[in-house]
Length: 92
Image 1: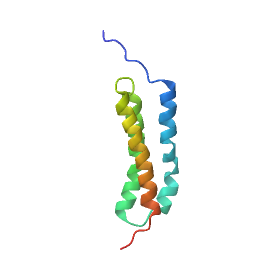
Image 2: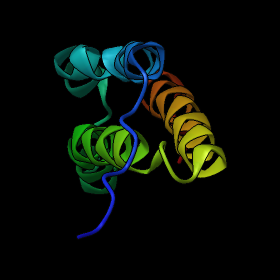
Image 3: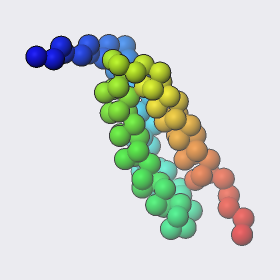
Image 4: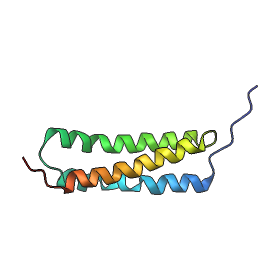
């Protein structure tokens, strides 16, 4: 029988939830996104990416703590990238 893995600590679960909270601004992001199909596609993919990254950070923390922190850092950078994408005027 295989030994059970240690669980993710509650403080890390709280950090993951806090880092994931900006996803709830998705409707506002979608409303303020420029009318380009590529921008809309990225904005629609954004919540799915954040949910998957949060789940993977939660799953991998007991064995690979550094990977969980890297996933959270990438998620924070994706939040910033989405805000820059929808708020920066596009010049053509």
